[in-house]
Image (cartoon, rainbow, N blue to C red; front, side, top):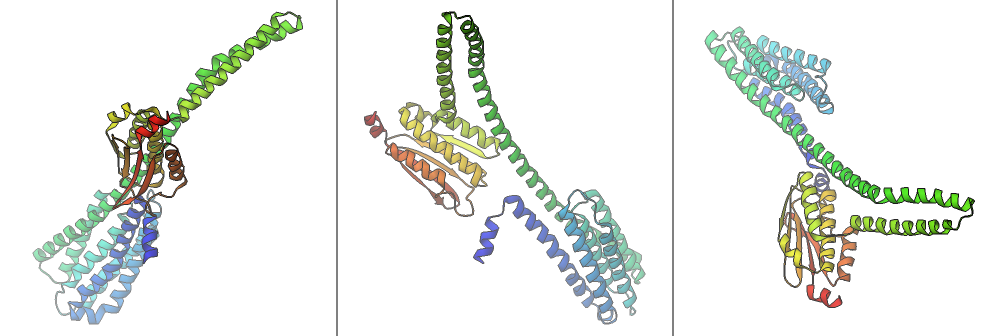
Length: 399
């Protein structure tokens, strides 16, 4: 049992919903022959005369319906499997005909319900890929079949019509309910796909920003170096003394470019608490995760080393939420005082209870230790919580 529970926790939300939907279909389709046999058992005459053939027709219909359902879940864009659907329909009609032939001592209440159950079996099988309107039409046809079978069995026309309408309503309700679960599965899968696209767009946007900054910094300087190199080469060929000045100027521009590139990289890799909080809010919301930041104004008065340390905490904690959880909500709380405390919690606890022993958090603990801070991470109920504490006074004394 623990193995099954562990396997279930490793599934994503769309995979869990798909498994639930798929096996709900399978379970109900397998249960329908049992309902059919119970309906036939209420009439001893029908049960004694036609039970073997009826059971065989029910098994054929169920097997074909399961095949059509499995093919539908495998390819949601394809039409229902024609061969499997034809076999299911023929098996269902055979079951209805068998129940009619077996009733010789007056009308049997089992006949219309046999028609309704095999009709529901066929409609459930195709509801994986067929929209609602055709299914409602199919429920009406099933009710008509049940009413005709009831009339042929000897029931009065009015009673047969009432039975047919009741069966049509019941079949329509069950079929639409199952179709609704398939629609929910489609919505969840599409939302998960959209979330992945949003994350990719966020990464691409950050790469474009870095490329744009690097281009702005290096474009002009590299152009100047190219022009001055050509000029210096020409002056050297003419043995002009100004060549040394041009070479020195090239060296100066190269050193300046190196400093500017380091500044760009430092700005890209460095941390700023206010910027990290704003970035966390933006990227989480882009990923479809509700983000709440509390106490942001308290960070502005903190010393720069404390802000840098806490900025790394925000960055690593948010990265873990995006990579290792299925969170719907994330809360970041900054509490002033000495030590200052930063708390990041989310409701997407992973299959192993979080990433408390991951490389990222271990490296973060080392960064905080350098600032005399402490880091704790772990599961609290159904939430994963990262808490960082950094003493303000100790950092100011070091400065």
